[in-house]
Image (cartoon, rainbow, N blue to C red; front, side, top):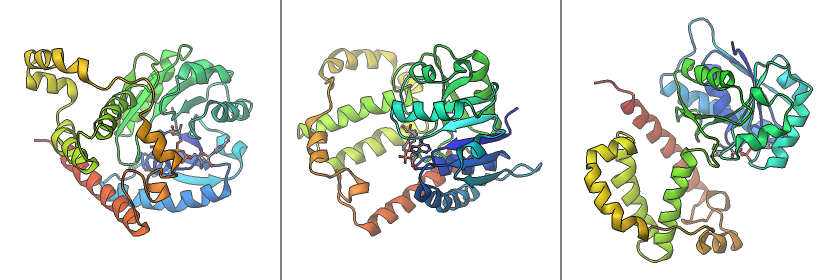
Length: 309
Ligand code: NAD
């Protein structure tokens, strides 16, 4: 049974994950290579805890878990039943972490990666117990989005996938098992198909960014939160899908490289919120406002979606 979890890497994703796991009654140790990241993570943990409070997610009666920060990786993984690697999306950085923890954890410790899409089969080549290695892909913000993808690689034991799926369920979250280790898994494949099309439409001058955001959020996103895409096929009728797809599929964006608009913005140093400009401009006040507003609305929508009739 999983009771102690170590999180390696406390950047964007780590603090929310730690807060959610502790709220499920688990003992979490949190490690990061960078002292500044560990310090930032403590403030982010408090924010995530108050969001969980507002979602009504309370610790089990048997006793709450806790998060302990440490700057020593051996201390972090000592006694852990599960280690979640959450360092940048780069195979060599991740492989270095696996090498480092290999000699520090027991042979029955499960090591999970929060990779957004590097095939698990590639990652598990760098660890000596590949049958105990699994993908556990959270969605950002991890303390608010309840769906987590679970992916086994070629060498992952079925019991490892099952243990992680059961853990996620026991926390009241929604595990989705991805049956084949395809790059990007499923959530990001669907998202990136959508992003390729919207960037193409903006680049071709079909629509302005503000208008496509309104179109997708209110026309598609709002509905998809209630009716999943496969159920949407039934709602529309498969005959309608068939006739529209028969002419539209051939016209959809299908480029294999990245749209030039993205490269041009990167070359100009406009990377998005982190640079103050991306597709849209942001002032520091606006960034704080956007982040508060998004968290508040995601919490409100989730409450409604969880209501039973
Ligand atoms: P991040 O860059 O915000 O944070 C990574 C942290 O890892 C940093 O604090 C860094 O100091 C630390 N780190 C780097 N090398 C380390 C090492 N050797 N040991 C310990 N700590 C180390 O990254 P993130 O956005 O939190 O993403 C982490 C992982 O989660 C990536 O694989 C990413 O693809 C995945 N992911 C990200 C998101 C997202 O929206 N950001 C969503 C789902 C999954």
